[in-house]
Image 1 (tube, rainbow, N blue to C red):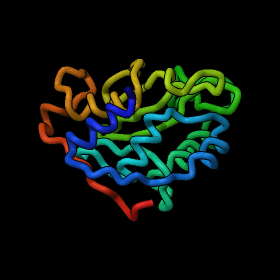
Image 2 (image 1 turned 135 degrees about the vertical axis):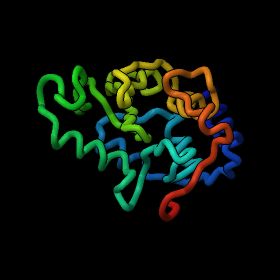
Image 3 (image 1 turned 90 degrees about the vertical axis):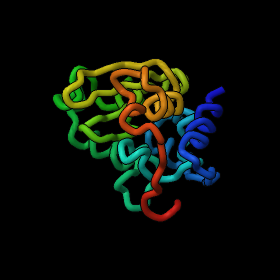
Length: 178
């Protein structure tokens, strides 16, 4: 079912799937948890890049600019070990063995997208947590790929959708193909 959303994103953006093989084992070992399967399929299909000049989904990136574990470590290094993070309040950064946020995408208008992750839960059930300037935090219960699709193509998906502003979604690769 979730693979369907990745296929819909590719179709909507006129993208030919790359079918990359990415080093998920080392990434998941570093994080101390598995990642959602549909997110991995999305990264393998598109590689590193930007959707509709708006959303950049993190993945494995040799430049580290869009590398999920590098960005997560940046949050981890600046976040208090206990209690809410002042930048992420009322949430905290994910740490192995605890529940917290793992960043998976960024967008224009200071939008940030995270999973509320726990190694004890199935990654397919992690809610998406997002906020954007000036919007407050929102929790959304859906898969990563469905969320991306709806941001790009569903004008009723408020306050997240860019479909009215960018009625023809596209994808631009950034940097070398991993």
